[in-house]
Length: 316
Image (tube, rainbow, N blue to C red; front, top):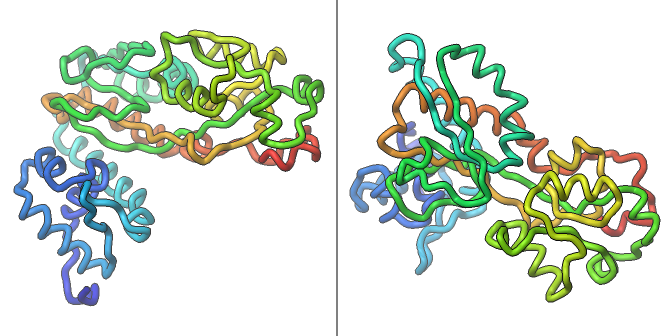
């Protein structure tokens, strides 16, 4: 690879890098950007040469990020966000007006979006927002919503998809339940723990699938149709649930284990025909900055929990 000083850095090549990183193949990324595959390949090579780094390894199934590529991914996403905000401000013809329909989960709406919403409403007084919360996946492609914030990445459709951040989960309980059972190890936790989870109607959810795999045939002690119900059950001492860190932290619950295989990307999905509409862009920018500014809270358990017994340190 050539020395980085021999090749000029082109800002727009970051867009190509992100498209390939998020979609896994040159073909899918080329369709998204409206470029030819050969052009995509040349621009990836140009970016690698300008940075002096190998960003991708070409496998039979597509393009995989190298360690160096993965290390700069978040920086590249921040660059894209800043560029889109700049373009949006330059293109907006005066005050933003109209209605935007946002699809997301009840948990993200109640715990993340609504507490921050007054700032958006203050900035755009004539913007109306409809928030659709449902455990079913709303189809942005078919205009069920203008945009969506969700954990499941759409694989097809006339949509623009961007990874905003990461949502981390942990196994949480309250102090009373922990003291009553006195777990000795992580294996003991899965063997004797009383787990709270989702009903069969929500079995498609990532958290529901994860719990089902870990319990390996064991029955849930309590099944619910909402995260709020699970949170209330854990707070009451009914057992253990897999909860998003930022929700459990607010209730000061105890994190028994923070599995690394249950971190999920947060995807912003926008109908491609609406991606440059000022009112939709305003909401998209609001969500982008909200997730970016809340990333530590969203992805990590609360540190320094004083009432976590030393006997449970092995579970962390």
